[in-house]
Length: 119
Image (cartoon, rainbow, N blue to C red; front, side, top):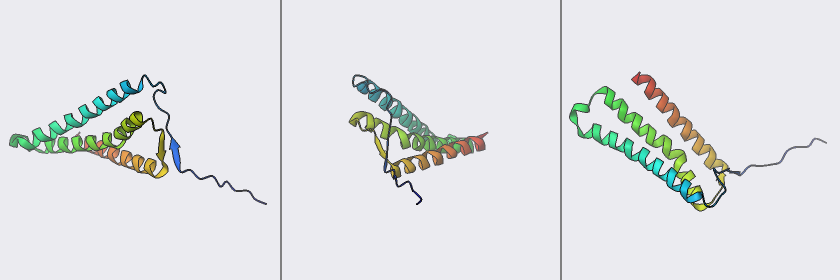
C-alpha cells in the first residue's frame, strides 16, 4: 500500500527580529518612521515634478514612475511587518504570502525595468 503525505499548509509562522517585549516599541517606531520617510519622500518627488512645468521632460517622467513603483514596493511588506510588531502576531496565511510575494516581485521587476530604461 502506498502512503501519501496529506499535510496541508494554511499559514506560515514568521520569525521576528526580536522576541524581547522591551524591543517591540523601538522596532515599531523605527520601521514606522522608515516607512513614512520613504513614502513621503517619494510623494514629494512626484508632487514636485507634477507642479513645475519645467520638469515635464522624459527623465522626470521616468523618475515619477520610479517613485511610484518604490512606494508600491515598500507598501507590499512594510505595513504587514509594522502591524505584526504592534499586534504580536506571527502568522501570515498562505494566500496572503503568495499575494505579497507576487506584488513584491512585480514591483521589484518594475523598478529594475525603469532603471534600465533610464540608463
